Amino acid sequence: MGRAFVYVILGGGVSAGYAALEFVRRGVSHGELCIISNESVAPYERPALSKGYLLPEGVELVLGTGVKSADVKRKTLLTTTGETISYKFLIIATGARALKLEEFGVNGSDAENVCYLRDISDANRLVNAIQSSPGGNAVVIGGGYIGMECAASLVINKINVTMVFPEAHCMARLLTPKIASYYEEYYKSRGVKFIKGTVLSSFDFDSNGKVTDVTLRDGTKLSVDMVVVGIGIRPNTGLFEGQLTLEKGGIKVNGMFQSSNSSVYAIGDVAAFPVKAFGEKRRLEHVDSARKSAKHAVSSIMEPDKTGEFDYIPFFYSRVFTLSWQFYGDNAGEVVYYGDLSASGSTFGAYWVNKGHVVGAFLEGGTREEYEAIAKTTTLRPAVEDLTELERQGLGFAVAVSQKPVALPPPIEVSGSTSGLLLEKPLYAWHATAGVVLAASIAAFAYFYGKRRRRW
Image (cartoon, rainbow, N blue to C red; front, side, top):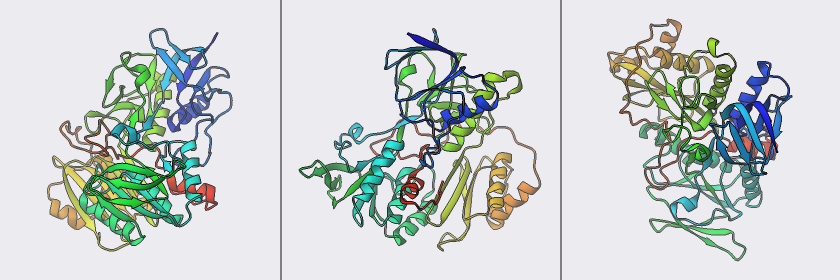
């Protein structure tokens, strides 16, 4: 028993949904496209988790169904129901899974008040935990995207929050200590407590199996009503190990998102693709990359002669409380700060200068035009000779550059960069707190509580 399709998308998240939309937009015929997902709902916008499904018309959905094995030579997938699905082109959009506590020797992930945040079922579980803990205490394990954004959501919902992570400051893979300090101080002003330089050691449970206390490696013991875990993710590549070339923890693809097998493409979190500006492959964990890689891969499949290589500048953003920041490019090289980082609600930013060129830019509290200016500046990578003058000009430098385009310099060789934009193998327990495609918590809570405030 089996079915055959021209195009098969394996996965049910953001990149899968956008790939399906792009196929339909480009006129794929009814019955040619199939999506296989182990989730029971159609692809949706994970950053909102607001059940905004991305399902277009004319797409065959195989939901609530996993894939047991793949044979890329025969172009077949064997599902958990025993059905064989064949394809002409396959797009792997399997994304990544949340790292679990058990992978670091701590048991308790199945407790009803221990929550992760990766899909709709996780969001429902988290909302239930909040509803059952009004005014309660929460411990957030991890200081990356999920940790910081969940902490903000919990505070908004009147939960007392303590954050625990091993690094010296929050979002250590992206933010500098100086920038991170600004956000930590703001969070403290909202009641969030930080315990840094240590990790979770164990849980205590009540007779119903709920976690009542958290014990840290430094001996600290905290009473809790709920625990949120955001300690990183790992790409779902298992089906294709030994069949496709892997790199950077994901599936290696070219600038068309084509893997080592010409009929197989990979997009989103699972794809390690060339970042032309930096002269190396990166695996990026963010919704913007997921959306754009999906559209480009479909274009590569349907109109290969009209599609050039993907040209993308890494982009990350966050909006929590009254704060809003955007980052473009690479956090490699010398850092030049501007603006007032001491005052709450201020506008400030930073440039990263590597080998005489601006390769990264960060801005908090900017306008739409100002964010567009730092994005364009990072794309153009203008030369900088005097860092003191760059500091003096501050945001004005990006505004001026964006208004007067300059010639693009050659790609910068950064193969030795220690950039934190790429999640590879965790260096030690809890180190994998990098940003993920699902930077979603506040909007999810807002949906269920009727606040309707979109924060991503």
